[in-house]
Amino acid sequence: MNDQAKSVDQRFDAVAPAELSSWNRQDTTWMLGLFGTAIGAGTLFLPINAGLGGFWPLVILALLAFPMTFYAHRGLTRFVLSGREGADITEVVEQHFGIKAGALITLLYFFAIFPILLIYSVGLTNTVASFLEHQLHITPPPRALLSFVLILGLLAVVRCGEQAIVKAMSLMVYPFIVALLFLAVYLIPHWNGGILTTASQVPAPSALLHTLWLAIPVMVFSFNHSPIISAFAVDQKRRYGVHAEERSSQILSRAHALMVLMVLFFVFSCVLTLSPEQLAEAKEQNLSILSYLANHFSNPTIAFAAPLIAFVAISKSFLGHYIGASEGLKGLIVKSGKRPSAKALDRIVAAFMLVICWIVATLNPSILGMIETVGGPVIAAILFLMPMYAIRKVPAMARYRGQASNVFVTAVGLVAISALVYKLTM
Image 1 (cartoon, rainbow, N blue to C red):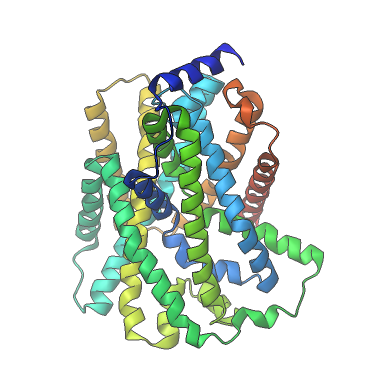
Image 2 (image 1 turned 90 degrees about the horizontal axis):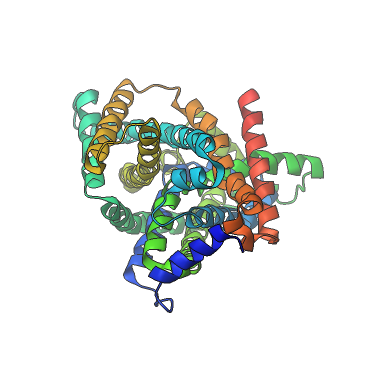
């Protein structure tokens, strides 16, 4: 082991407890926080996107969901843990790959996450405005005022600190889980086979591979919570020292098991209720699965609950992505040569986020979907490929070499990036 790896281990030993403590409330809070970042607005479109490919591709994607998400996020967590004490992802990149690479990754990291934050700002404003108008029959206030109040409210949670964000997200997870379960169970009496009508039609190998190739990014990014992984890893390292990797893997595995089981039950309940033609119609109308189901059943309960569920989903995801976006922006400011105090840096970042998110939410541009797609390949590169490259090159991560999961994560990352780039050129 080289000097760098030894120094990391020695530093761990100096702060680590002798034994790993039992599972505690903070671990549960982080598990639900990870769940909350990953499972948000994208989940409400997943049944449409995943179900359109037919029965067999959906079954294969369901089997791949857990390993795809767990191994990738575990790799990114290990990468952050390999850095010095208290270093976030942007600092770890600089530590391992140099100042220039650190600045480049920080820039890409910010521009991969920040556009998604803008999308959530627009989605949140649209959801609340629609709810006020159609469900409560109240004329919504001017869009500029509504968006400002909503974003300011979320940033008020942010100002309470990272632990407050994670706790707020973990609390919002409970009603979201209940809502997803309620909807999935509510649909059971309405199961009519739906996607099973395609089960007898086994696609040709080439067609199956093409469908999976284009569908894998949908599954990957529906479970993506990379923006919060850096903060998660830093906190685990501070709490558990040398045991951080073991405990973080336990938290990740439970979070991913929860999100995969919950979401797949919801997805299969939806696709067993709606035919492939109806799923295609929902995509054509650009509706979430909740909105389409509300129209399909003309059910006032779903019509009233859908926007509330969407509000919780978007708010959770906004808070989780804010952690990553602010981390990237702080890194860019520091790497530019400016060294404001920590309090001043927090205020600068919060003010920038408020102004930009408010302007974009007020303007309501339709180009945001394209921006999200452009950010996809960058997120895939950071989540899948960068940690695997580090395992090959960085001495502090040498102990993770030779694992079959590394090959799997690299392959999925390349598939996701190539499919996203292909979609952009279509």
